[in-house]
Length: 340
Image 1: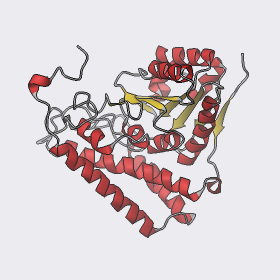
Image 2: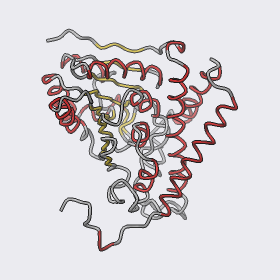
Image 3: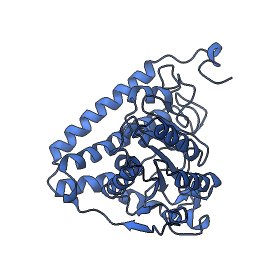
Image 4: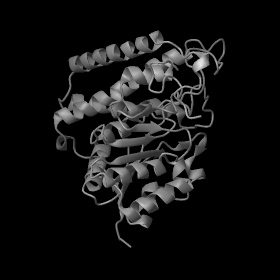
């Protein structure tokens, strides 16, 4: 068996990345956060009095990815829409970073005909052939399909790869280990991503996982494993660059774990009484922290920040308006666009 070992990735010096790359990473994180803040606003607008999860323009559960934007931005910067992504029940940051149409994504969240799945899937079941993107509410479900897509890409002679994303809790599922084993055995072009946000719903990782770092599990399958600390977008970018290059060269899969941050509840309406560290969470927000780095390094100035944010707000509100104006599915067509 290979003696490949796990490494913990420290933050890359800022000057390593070109200014335009750093700006792209920042812009992608701001776009994802701004869009989710608009979705959160619309989600809660008509849930009262109190909180009725079944009411409103966006009924049902909603899992937001605020705080985890560095993972998607850093990974997807190396991908094209020819590459496939299988994401989790908390998928928005990856969908946006992978180039999904903002209008179609938003309409799907609202359950409208203009959505990706004509409003049938909702936010946990986004499916977009144009960007090879899919996600599921089933824990670790995305890992095996990613292998299938990677196998297909290689069989077709393409240099496209698959990226499989899951949370740290799912690394204890059988599908996680079965997928790593088969991908390593067949040297498939897959990059496995674990988002460690410390919480599996309300269970801390120390109560569910026997080892501190899931990236250490890669060595059991003879593949590289890296852990990126501090929710560092540039560290993610560097680690993902190595893993994607390895996959495209036909050298097989890699595993990257990112210690990220879930700023909000497991779902909207979660009171989070189980989180003793909750008062400290706002101070760990990765977006203002990265913004300050760019300001300090002279890559960005206050005027540039406001111009970028204004442009992003315009895009987001356009997508919200499109979703609201898109028709709702007719009840008689409930069986259309779904498998019988």
